[in-house]
Image (cartoon, rainbow, N blue to C red):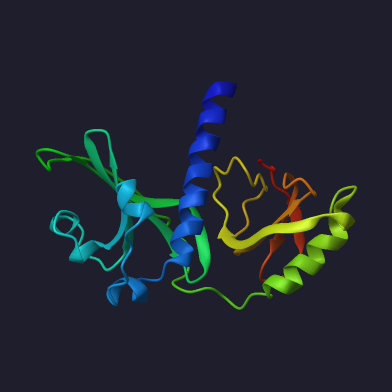
Length: 203
């Protein structure tokens, strides 16, 4: 059971990393034809608009941004859902194709239907970090901010175990020590400005 839980958590971390990367690549940049050569070509990774991709466009007519990867004998397209600037934890669309035949092998969709189309008014990142700084665990006052982002927390979250699951988006504030290791994660209701608890730090 512990092994299964660890595996699920590792998968969610991967999704988190993908979501962060997606957040910094804007759709407008892709539409203007930004050249994404170099390292991404070397690793067979690129970013595409679903409806504009020759293969994916046959199945996905949206203008969503997908990460395209070639993995072994598969071509995989993945989209991490966001609502404005907030990652929606666990929500994703994944297509897997046979690399040679281009046959669709698997389609995975997880998409919550209880969320708004746009973010409600939220406190600023700076306000969230100030609140988090006052509530951190021992030694946090001398720690630095490693990363702060907005997120709708999943009821199945391994990393942000808040019960009941927050309905509002949350600021997730990571602290690191002078060696760069995460030492605490503070979860703050981004609408009400209240601390909800601690997340699970990861290296």
